[in-house]
Amino acid sequence: MAVDILKISKDAIEASKKYDDVINASIGMFYDEDKTIGGMPTVSKAIKGLTDEEILPYPAVDGGMIFKKNVISWVLGQYEESIRKHMFINACATPGGSGAIAATFSIFSKPGDSIFVSDIRWQYERFADRAKLNVFEHQLFDGDHFNLKSFRERLVELCKKQHEVIVIVNDPCHNPTGFTLSEQEFKDIIYILNEMKDNSIVFLYDLAYLEYSHESDNRIKISHLPMLQSHVLTIIGFSGSKTFGAYGLRLGAAIMISSNEDKVKAAYPKYVNEARGSWSAAPTASIELFNKFQIAENKKNFLKDLAKINTLVQKRSQSFVSQAKAIGLKTHPFRSGFYTVVLTKDPEKDYLKLAEHRIFGVPMNGGVRFALCSLSLKDIEGLPQKIKTILNL
Ligand SMILES: Cc1ncc(COP(=O)(O)O)c(C=O)c1O
View 1 (spheres, rainbow, N blue to C red):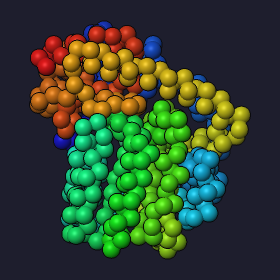
View 2 (cartoon, helix red, strand yellow):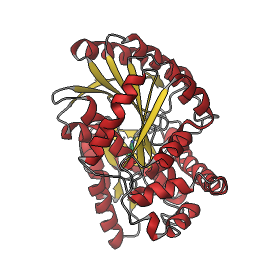
View 3 (cartoon, rainbow, N blue to C red):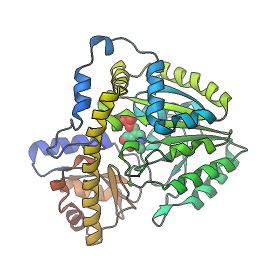
View 4 (cartoon, rainbow, N blue to C red):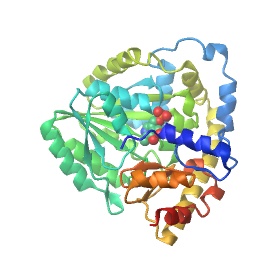
């Protein structure tokens, strides 16, 4: 179901010029309670403080040594040292997490191949279409849990047909459901990937919403990557858009990790080549902005902004989910993050029906997704009831 989310968002913006009761829950951007976008003052200030030298020149295609070191440290956090002991690592700057996904598809597959995805997912088929790939699905849920049985069975099936397989896991704060894997579920996924040792596995770990998970340690799962065996190459897709609330800057990275040095050595120049032959280089401003936040004082202030946003996003989601529960409106299992999905019978028709009532969500497999990150608490008050009434659920 490849709808154009940016178009739905534009329609919502157009409607809000005429009406003041528009609910624009179409897109994953954080808006403040007063509907302004600059929810992270430290980021806005750092952008405005960039000099010409930090904006205008071409950057290194991979982002440069400093950026690579910084982005690896950022993502691996306190586990960097222990991971580096067992694994080989490299990185390449990309325009957003999207660049990392598009490049990974292009590098590790050939037209006609299938990528391994969950049945409920973000729009990976947009990237797959471009690379002329098919999708091969497993079921995401078994009740309130990750469906390990389906993940394993379907992966075994695909691995029999195709030697090199890109396996996508979007965690934490899965888009569109807001589900987050438990540590054990993540470890079980690793065990299953390890079982596929006659294949070459590219584990595309899309952790765009890493900073928004409300786990007691949001990097503990990353610490288990060294368990992956040598037939697996992990590509972490990092999104600066979500991390810094700077969606238009196009900051991201593909981080390559494997216990197999040859895999990382072979992958790195392919990412550089992919960049050079498509987007050329990620914006200098985004690379320099990221590097600013490695300075301890800046990072400390940024983390304060992030904590505020994180608390608010969670409050909004909890408000929606608890109201939904109270009136019997069904959602997918939700833990944290920007979105939740209301289960409906005919998402393609239902989102249009809601749009007629100026409530803009996005149709997904099994329901309509609402980006609660962009709604105020006031918008959310009574929203589940409105949805229930309009859709007659
Ligand atoms: C699950 C997921 N991955 C990756 C991205 C890519 O974001 P960006 O390219 O802006 O970094 C998004 C954006 O919505 C997303 O929801």
